[in-house]
Length: 155
Image 1 (cartoon, rainbow, N blue to C red):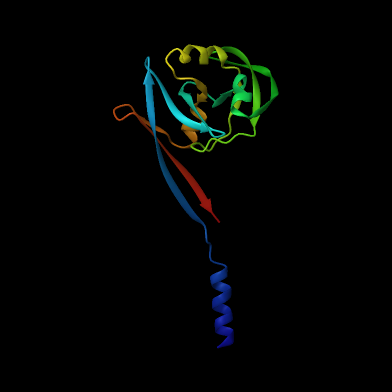
Image 2: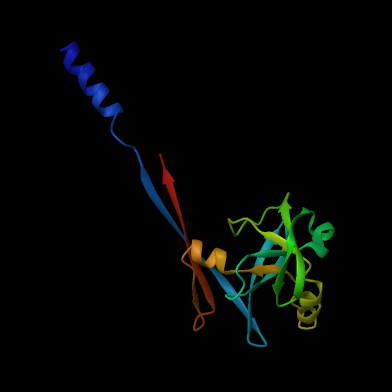
C-alpha cells in the first residue's frame, strides 16, 4: 500500500501544471481631428497616448520626464524618424503605466504634444504597433473602444 501511494504521489507531482490564462481588456478611445487617443495613468498622473498604428514602437515624451517622474538615457546613435521628425532614441525607466504592460522607448515629442495641447489633449506619448501586434489589439471605431488581450503562461 505504501508503494502504491508513493507511486501515485510521484506521478501526480510529474504532471504538467502549465496553464494559459487570457485577460481581456478594453479602453475608451477619445477622438479629436480624426486622431485617436487613450487616457492612461503614468506614475500616478493622468495623461493621454496618441494611438498610431503606423508607429513601429510605443514612445514616451522625454521632454516631460520631470513632470511625470520617469528617467531616460540615450541608447542609440541612430535616430528615430516619425511624426515629430528625426529624433534621438532613449531607454525609459522608473515608470509605471497601470493600464498597459509593455516597455516604452523615448524620444522628444514636444512639437507633437504642442499641436494636441490646443485641443486640450496633452499627450505624453504614442501607442505604437509593437503593443498592437503583441496583444492582438482591435480598434472598434463604432463604439470608440480599444480591445486587447494579455496571455500569461503559468508554470
